Image 1 (cartoon, one colour):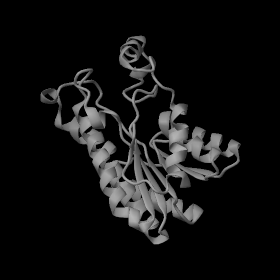
Image 2 (tube, rainbow, N blue to C red):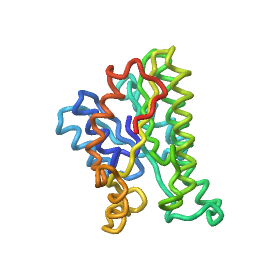
Image 3 (cartoon, rainbow, N blue to C red):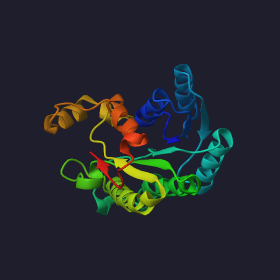
Image 4 (cartoon, rainbow, N blue to C red):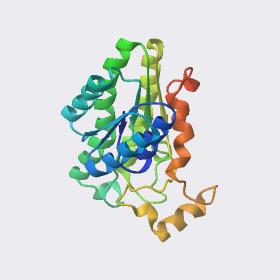
Length: 238
């Protein structure tokens, strides 16, 4: 299962899983984009279904995992990838309660809902992989560049939730780890990562001298989803 599978990192994670031999459940609020991802996976030769899912809604997440098991009989891998960011950077004293609640609902509550439902299946199986997509800002904050305090709060919580779940579920044969991406060219934040000004700013302080492409996370995704990471728990790949 990949949440936020319609575009960006989610679409790439779904594709990577198919390339490595998995059947994939693509979940997103973007029905058209999700169908495109499903078509790509089927061209690779794997089975795939699209599930309309708003991860901020508990019922949607319950239905997502239920549909997965009904269709494929089991659940081996969950990518908690769906995420949003504040509509525009603002320091905390200018943040609205609405912005706080909406970002946390997707970026943190969604991880809780999907993980909880997936773990109910994985505990019975005594196996499974959960890969949370956090952020470098979940470790560092971003105020020196641009303030997105709600996003950073959510991602920081995902970082520590990953550590906690990693320890809790390792004895049950379930690996929970996270990827903390730096700057990747995606649609998050309304596609602002595509503007020349933003790209120049980011590239200026990035050791590689550029933003990354989503495809560059395929290796990390397959590593954490496969037997290669069977002895890892609660770790963060930056």
